[in-house]
Amino acid sequence: MRGALTAAGRDPRRRVRRLLSLCLTGVLSVVYLWVGLSAHPPAVLSRLPDAATHSVGYGVLSWAAVASTLAWRMPFPWALAGGYSLGHGALLELLQSTTASRLAEWRDLMWDGVGTATALGAAAALRRRRCGS
Image 1 (tube, rainbow, N blue to C red):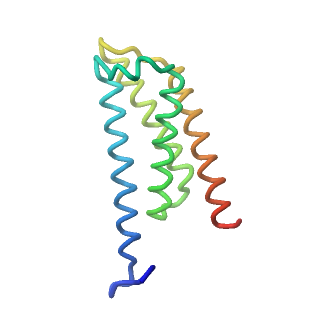
Image 2: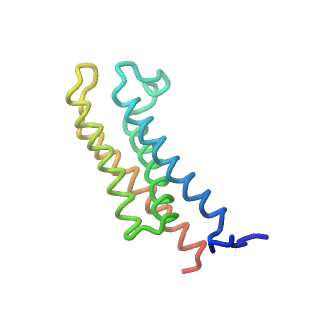
């Protein structure tokens, strides 16, 4: 039965979606920090333009973050997701400035913002289309 409620009055599928969205956001966050601080990032990333890796990567992180904030019914989900993604990018650049093997480039944060804005805009448009508003 789709949408069936448990005795506690909660949809178990919704709980699973909530946990999965939070786990995905957390895993992406940790992986991005690991790759961003690694002295030798994966070779495939060095073949791609820096702007593309930042825009796509932070677009994906923003999409996961907004899915999580919406699933958890947090206040101001779009602002929280965007702030989280940009804050993560700023933290990564700050941490890179403290390492000898990586170089902090604040231009990367701009590309993170491009990916974040694009993903949040696309997610908002898709949500409006699905909800009919």
